[in-house]
Image (cartoon, rainbow, N blue to C red; front, side):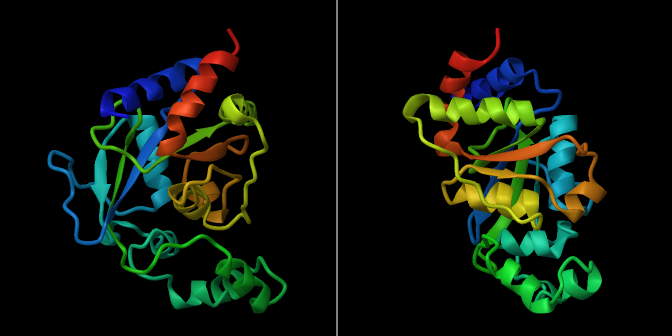
Length: 228
């Protein structure tokens, strides 16, 4: 795939699914590698989920460093530093958010969250898929359950089978959406406390993370199964 194909897939996805916002291209630049020329640095420090939500609505393209990522839990799972100790230990979710019966239960959940090695990522790039100037690792599609259904059916069109997904309502757009998909697995996720509070993602919206290497199969399937 080249960038023109990637852009075309993005436009086809918007038109076929009648998406109200753009699919978002995300790239994790490995530590020590150069950030592509011509891409501006973001102008504010917010959370990863907020960056994704901003890009899908505004059509901007930019890169972020660890210093720009306000949610250090999300930054940590994507390899921009390490998970904060209170997140890794489960204390934040047990004592802070009171979402678990014990800290051990919280820690057990966090230990199962797909996470990249600490300090393995230099920067995170964001752009609307139909206009991206860089080759993404992952495409995030935020849409309603029916559109998630169509994306799933599109992926199944070529080879069949079943889509096995894993989520826990924690680290949703970062781990479930980006890291899991970067590892080659389509991820479907329902959101998390942060992404539901700090973004404009609607209650009725979900997220699918698609590895770029599977994008052509999904796009081809959509052409066949999308409602006319």
